[in-house]
Image 1 (cartoon, rainbow, N blue to C red):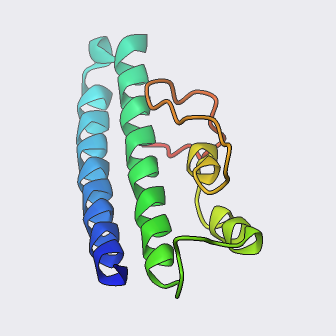
Image 2 (image 1 turned 30 degrees about the vertical axis):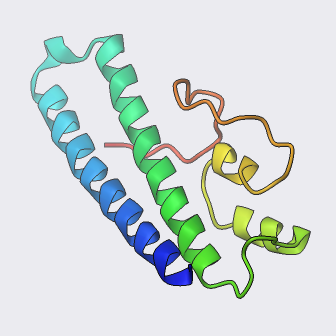
Length: 117
């Protein structure tokens, strides 16, 4: 199972990198065309940024889980340690029982870092 989690982590990291490339391509296009810089376009770009950050977080999380000897039950200290390694509150919430379901359609409440293009 550890090998599987490691492969999933690598795959998610690759998806995050691909998303980052698309994100920068779109940002460059928007920078060249001032008319395209509508609020809707910027909101979509922010959603793309959120998607990349979430994929990065999940890649890190699965990588660290793959390195644990027993990951089906992690201790509270391990959960806190893992939660400090990710950016988004939504990812942190996955580590704790009883956390609110993760809604991916509205990233605005997260306190993840903002990447400027």
